[in-house]
Amino acid sequence: MKKNLFLGLLIAILVAVVVSGCSSESKPMYVDISAKDAKELLDNNPDVVVIDVSPNYDQGHIPGAINYYLGDGSLDEAISTLDKSKTYLIYCHVDSVAIAGAEKLIEAGFEKVYRLEGNYSAWVEEGYPVEK
Image (tube, rainbow, N blue to C red; front, top):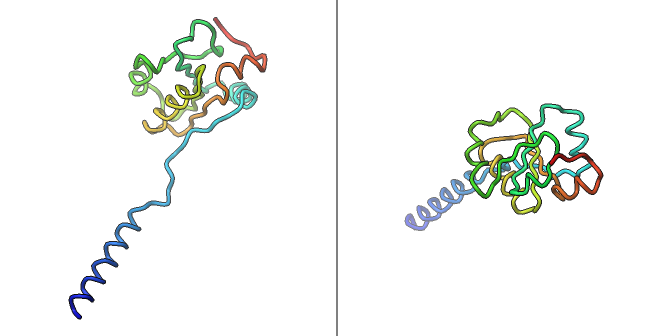
């Protein structure tokens, strides 16, 4: 009887520890924004840092964008030099790379990270300016 009571108490304690370890806080996430919202963000916040994580930067990019190509480790090298208090807009020519770039910033502790939904092509389709 005492053995069953002890076992039941032990199980209850273990369940309480496991449940209390599951935090209800969600980790920060980047925010997907449309090209229109990205243009508005840039127009209203001149301090936004625009990062192009694409290898195609020379073929065209958003004005003022910095190229930290994800594939060659440039973004990884740059992260420690970036100001975490600033707002960042990340884009590429494909979703998977832009998503990976945004996630790298979030994982490094950046809190204000936006990803251009539709990437560079969405920006161009809206007729917004580009640099080459």
